[in-house]
Length: 459
Image (cartoon, rainbow, N blue to C red; front, side):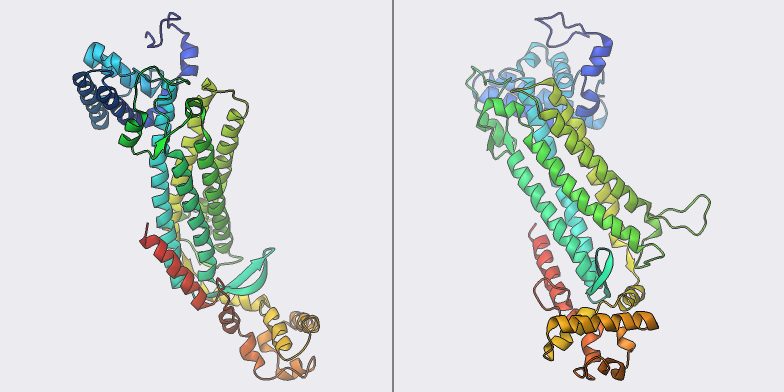
């Protein structure tokens, strides 16, 4: 097959070189963006008088028909073509003859591919944000159900202080809010049109780049043509945002894996999102959560791959930049797939409140409150801390918890202890006393839920 770039060379390359050079197997997914970008370009050419208005209309109609034919299945994308841009132009030329050859006036594949990938990733970013809003809703709804359910809060994976399960879930909701914000920020910088930068230096034609940008929904244009064709910052930035998102999903998945184990039994995952064992009939494995955790490394790899590709490239376009697409497409697909699984997994997850409370009681996580009780009675904190630690040691030695020690046992350590102690160290009191903004009290969690719901209502 003769190449459209034949001229300086005979356009004949080795079959192996063709396969190596081709990108259509992965850039064909951008056919909608490629065709819509070309339609806007044809409209600009006609509006500027670079081609006749009749030719512009024929090009736009022809492109619209190609789009319709691909979507209906009547036209199959030819995987023997070098890339999606050449495929569309080839079909257009076959259908319109010489008029089809006018489409590429005042344009290069360099700015064309930069346009397509910005448009494609803009659409993908919007889709990912919608999925994140759904996850945010699932987390918030679940937090509302469990806003008063007491569980141990951990540091160093050791029981530390009592919190509520709703408070814990809202921590992830806040992470997801930041992920949405990062994607929105990334989209804003992505949404600048490179079309009209041409190969690297612009064009001698009297084009209207802002006309095309506006027609395609961009906020403006790339102001330097060299930068316009060689910039892939937006890909790196999106990969970075997706890596942080996947880190959040992985941390949550790790906790779901721990919490659903027999050692914790804090949550029960739906059978729809777990698997069994081929040999051990008692098993219920959190495979979906484990896969999300595992796929996080894959997205990190995509980020490092693109950073490595770009780090030594001189301006402007280099063929190395073709390697941007498989990395960014893979990361977007992976993140979307993980969200599609995680959202219903959260929606169907159930908490075992009794086990959470029992673990909280056995962890002596009200020991800080015990020390605070003595401090409020006038004892220096370090002295109160020492007595509290000694009482914990006594409970461990005797198989008790702080709530079951008698008042006489307490008074053996300090006369400041009185009957009001038991209310002060009850776990529900410990939680409700955390009245500082953002804390774990039910009222505080309700404020966090309200805040997130307001964000959701304004999206």
